[in-house]
Image 1 (cartoon, rainbow, N blue to C red):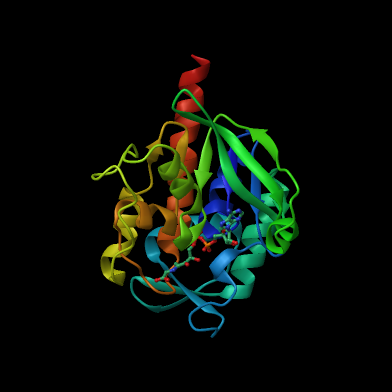
Image 2: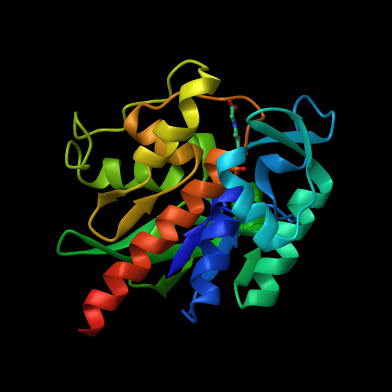
Length: 235
Ligand code: 48H
């Protein structure tokens, strides 16, 4: 499985898949892994996590405080670094400083990624990319939804969304966001699953500010969906 984006949803997906013994690689454009977790809410270095995601915090060993039901508060730096280190320890291969610039597509199915060094991409150098094959790709690129948009360009109108296109992120609605993020975590094109904010942007879900439970749960759901499909492949 190839995961694009090292934010909370991508990291939890990678952790669950690696723990299940699958070969899984995560590609992150930036030098640091953790995506939007590091800055917390407005750089106050704290994030909010819904009660429902407590088993994930406990599994990773991330500490929390209960300030107001049903919300928990975690240190952003502890969360980003622990998600990263525990995922790597579980067997997730992390490739940082790599930009995923395209997908490998055959007969209407995603078969992998086209990658290049992020500094090459940023400098606009004319250096050709390489490819990575995978059974499934997870788009965990956050608000940008980069991989789904690349697919949309190749096969306009053929995404598995109500309009066949990226629906676009809706206005902030924290109370509804967690359940909608989970609903929106699914296959959007054969071989391509969306997780985290990319799922909301793809299917028209709302923003939620610095509330990260939905991101963690979304990564977990994407991984379990893929594990089920891999099991079907084997039988
Ligand atoms: C390689 C790439 C590429 C690419 C992007 O933004 P993230 O933290 O993503 P999520 O969905 O796990 O978490 C979202 C959360 O951080 C957030 O923004 C919230 C909750 N917002 C709510 C609100 O109301 O605003 O991480 C995505 C990662 C980043 O590190 C990017 O650098 C990386 O993906 N990335 N890596 N190749 N083409 N595109």
